[in-house]
Length: 172
Image (cartoon, rainbow, N blue to C red; front, side):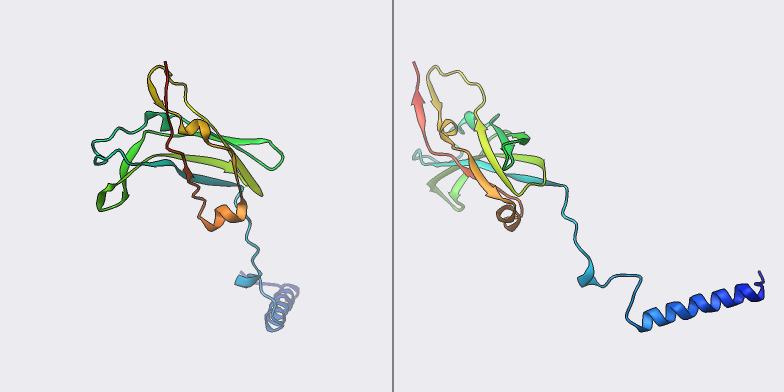
């Protein structure tokens, strides 16, 4: 390809302009400290509901409270708008102090929620329906709404655990 005299002059002027801009410290690519990070539009908050109890037996012999499963966590923003929900999965158990099965058991279940970004989140808890005849675990019923700011959750890598009180009710 050949350029006309006018075309060559345009290329030379463009090259000279780029060289001058680079020499003056301008760059087509911003420096690392000049890049504004764009916050994610969504975040995944995950964690566990757990209760520590000691029945005087090893964790493998004790019964995991089934009421920890199926709990609905409802997340709201600062203005009370509902941002999303999560439901706890199947329960698990392990020693409170690993290596010492006599120190009591930690019963737990996990949840995970994908939520829009918000300056703060409040979570409320709704227990799964249950048969209230006989003995049942009512600790989830006693959970109160809890609030955390974006900064608090960010510092915990968006892990948010909730301790449930060790409460049982004998129904009739």
